[in-house]
Image (cartoon, rainbow, N blue to C red; front, side):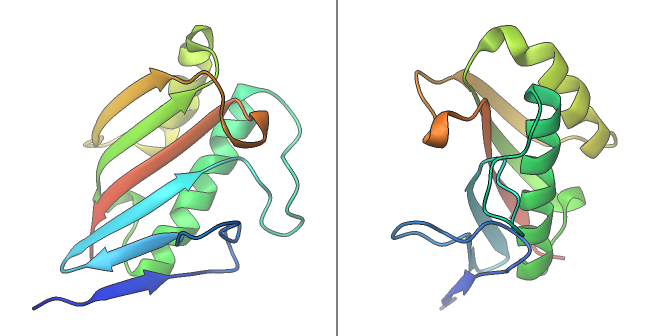
Length: 128
């Protein structure tokens, strides 16, 4: 039977509660939602939705790398936006990270996100 393995990396923001950056079970990686925190400083990145989306995806990339996977292996993402009116600029940045064979995705507007960020993204990926 497959064991659950906790994933942690200093290249992404540390978990600030009773959760893991990701869990590997079998050949699947389950990544917790990432927000636009700079892992070096623990501070929110400057800028708008484009800058925040890029930081979130860089954080997810670091967690996936630590798990033994990659953005190319992402099967499904869920994008949480503070304001659905920012979908187009978020989607433009997202498309740079997932330009070939993009994963399945759901995008929802959330009433409030941690630290009042504009975007949070979680994903499920296959191991390499």
